[in-house]
Image (tube, rainbow, N blue to C red; front, side, top):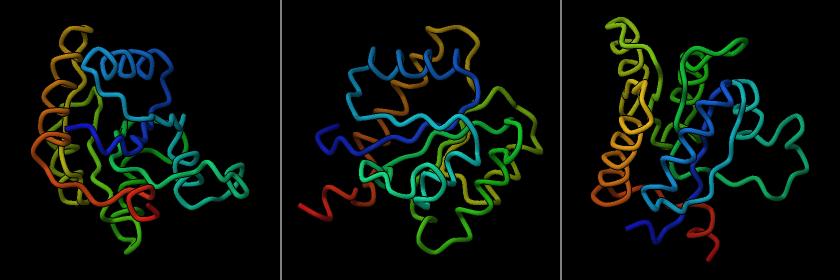
Length: 153
């Protein structure tokens, strides 16, 4: 049920991981627009229309965010903490998509308000299967908050 076609915000500092995730989304026929932020700081600027996004009319509130944890500067944990304590941002479903499987990271992310924690599979086929499962749940079963388009249309 990807008729909504709400924006997916992908926050990951690794270009190879971004490319692999995007290819996995497309292989699974998830045609939602994807905006890539290369750091937690870039994502924060995007979400709050700050920095280079201040006057960018193309900025849209994401329907779903895929968030890596380990990034230089503002990392995924810090961004998650900020967003989940912000009344305007806390409703954005946030899927942690990271290489970590550390029980402390898992516990902390759920405590901070992550919607799901997925360890990035090393192989592309594993990532594609994980994205398929994510698509089936988040765009097939779960009810998501309305996107900007739904609110304006």
